[in-house]
Amino acid sequence: HRPGHKTSDASWSVICTPFSIRNRVIGAITIHKRGVDQFDENDLSLLTAISNQAASSIENARLFDASQRQLKISALLNEASRVINSSLDINEIMQSLLAQMNDFLHAEAISIALVDKQTDELVYQVAEGIGSDEIVGLRLPNNQGLSGWVMKNSEPALVPDTRLDPRFRQLGDDRTGFETVAMICAPMIFKGEKLGTIQAINPIDGDFSEEDLDVLVNLANIASTAIANAQQYARTVAAESRYTSLFQDTADPIILTDMRGRIVEANRRAFDLFGYQRNELLNMSIQDLHPNTAVLPKAKKIRSDKVLMFQSDVYTKNEPPIPMDVYTKRTIHGDDQLLQWIHHDITEQIELEKMRGDLTAMLFHDLQSPLGNVISSLELLAYEIPPELTNSPLSAMLDIARRSSSRLETLIRSLLDINRLEAGQPIIEQIQVDMYLLVEEVHEYERPNFEQRRVQFINNLPKELPRIFVEEDMIRRVLVNLVNNALKYSSAKQLITVSGLIQSESDHLLVSVTDEGSGIPKQFRETIFEKFERVATADTNAKGLGLGLAFCRLAVEAHNGRIWVDDNPSGGARFNFTLPLA
Image 1 (cartoon, rainbow, N blue to C red):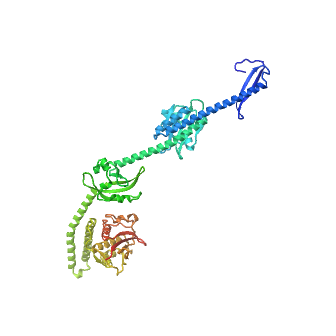
Image 2 (cartoon, rainbow, N blue to C red):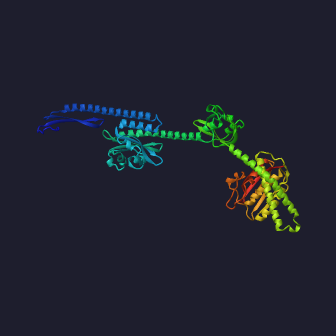
Image 3 (cartoon, rainbow, N blue to C red):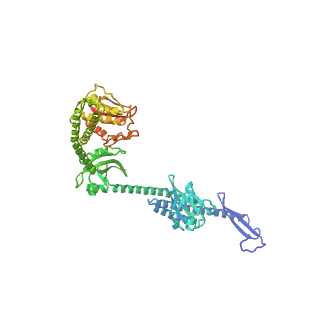
């Protein structure tokens, strides 16, 4: 009965056929008529033909509607891809994404949350619709709520009724006062990295469908690439900004050149210190700043992982040349390979070194004369002691005074020689010297120290060694310093050995002074030959100014030799140096 139609005892005839297409029923058509036997087989055949035609029309209409909807989705995704990927600004990308989402989904609220890598939280960045102002800035643990579940599992989710889903949390609703009834959410992932989620809440018409979720997933995939690129761009811009700040604000002048030496960029300090305007400096070559040093050939030879360091005078526009330490390395800027030249002003350092050298020379020249008088007086006193007092305490004290004065004289002469050698003055008093006899002389001089410390000494040099061509007193002091150094690090009953052999390929004599002490740690084997450098080990606290080995290096190198230290195979240190044969 039709609604509201009065019940009747009258009879009715009914004819009904299905809407069927390709063996699939999509509906039915029914006709009622009062009375009995109102329809026959012809009516049924006619109605069947009509229903078949109607079914085909209905199916075509459905297919057309689906194709139109698919075209709309494709157009939406294409437009979203075009708009989103046209920008490298993250906020602009997310706002464009929200607009595209709302055009299709028609939800009461939509939002985007990104992962904060420092706290591992989901932070809502942008939102539209009800409660959007309140939701922006909300932070949620990335393992709570539906968005957290989607983020953790990297899977989209469709929830038609949040009251029935245990994954849903009311954290957002509590903040906005808005009730979430239904929700779809999709993760944004780029190359395995979880970037965040996008979500839509409460469809305005009907329910969220799987098709809506598919659209959201596709939008999330498009956005993932764009957001990842934008984040990388933001990091690159930030790094570039930090580099520019460091480049411009550093206290040292920095210049960038191409591989031919043409200046392509410089920082503010370079313009200020060198006195050139920007257009002037960028039209110059690095060689123009260093006319007295062949800087470019050196720089072209350095590898990408090495730094070239040298000293050179930089010629400024209006001021006198400035002495500089220059550090050069290869660097990549964009697609270009450049040379970076960092200049460090050493004017004050050089002035201080000169003042210290002048002061040292003055002090020791002034000390040398009175010390010579002291030594002469001690020698005269020694001759005046009668034979019967030779072994008396007075004689012993006089010997101590003579040895101490002699050591002080040696120290003064070494300091003067250091200044002379550092200034590049050549040695001029070379003679032929028997190295075996020189070692014996040094041992005799140091005998009291060996006896006091109960350390043994062996001169292993062959007596028939060819003579060397050296400044004798200087090499004597080299031996004294090395033997003294070995004594400082030796204990009772240990052995100090001097040995040597001929290096036929270089016409030099190799001399080694070996001890059995604690040895020299590898990290100090280069620096111990610098002035004022000393090594204190666990079992000794060696005293001294740290000048002895510096003098040894300068003296040996002045004779075109070299000096180095390595391990004694049986323990301890072995100092080696080479000297030219006569």
